[in-house]
Length: 105
Image (cartoon, rainbow, N blue to C red; front, top):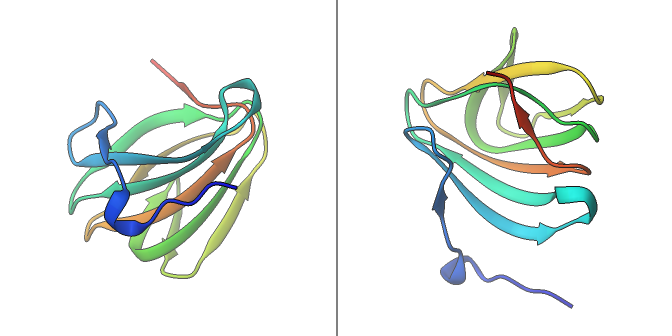
């Protein structure tokens, strides 16, 4: 069993300004589950998830490619699809990916 209390979260920089990540669970093939926190105006560049991606917006809103996702919205992105992410107001997301992430240069 694994438990992470909110007071124990370790937020790490993503390498992109205003975007932080907290590893929840490491999975096979480099995937797993993370919390991702966007500050107002922050963005994450175009990328893909070779094993697909599940995303749930806990608070705030994001623009994922051409779609606006708001609090409570869920999206499954199949393997091979490319998208970028940005948030005007800030957001907190839960993301699960079976095989990690590949940022598109």
